[in-house]
Image (cartoon, rainbow, N blue to C red):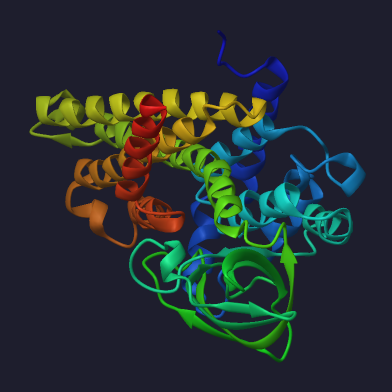
Length: 371
């Protein structure tokens, strides 16, 4: 079985890297970090929308390119490599996937063309506080077209125009679609380790909302969305990990100590080797996840959990060792190492911490083997 990307997909990857090298990268990320009034780069968002990336996996009848999720995986890796400060993952991996998975024809027609055009920023809200969300922990309530309750933290909730919310619905739990630009919604911006990906607390008081998908199927649909998003996030993490390895390698070749390149020292060689091995493990799992996602294979829940766990571990290791390789300078604001460390820590918890996904993998394997 060949898990490699096609020539066309590799060409898309190359073009995406060229574009992001020119339009994104550390200079753009730092601009967002330096301005407390913004949480993403609006110009980059507009450019990405103009290239059609937001609609890469959205069908043509709904205003997208209809390319597929393998192409989206390719783009995700390059966006992660560039540490792009835009709400791409919240809008595309979570919000758009939820609408495509569970939305009615009317909802898809109303929302997906706006996502593809960059006119709509979406977010996906499950958590209501510390700890992994469970059906029993959900307190937000949807009743007769009105939503009440709170969600915290919500990635990109500070800039999103629409949200998909997990809420109680009678005796069950449902996904609910809500326009955040209305009187019944209050946002409170939160401070995080990575200000280039905004977070907020969303509070709802009889906000107008509508059900997304069948009543009482919210938890199952949310799990399906998380599995899809996990694979795409894994590619972002692989891209960031690779950038860390290349940055550390370049520095080790150019930095001299005791009249020798520091890369010639065994301790540095071991760091770089450990980073490489972790990336290859993560990439292998991510490719498996991409295959399962693009073919809607029954193995997707297992592949998603494995790719998410491996990529989270790899990105943290690579970001940490990149700082260590740079020595004292690596910890300073002037060197770009901290941009990747911030993003590594943030992505590791965006859709559930690595421990949560490892537990999911074990439980899913146990259930399959017991069947």
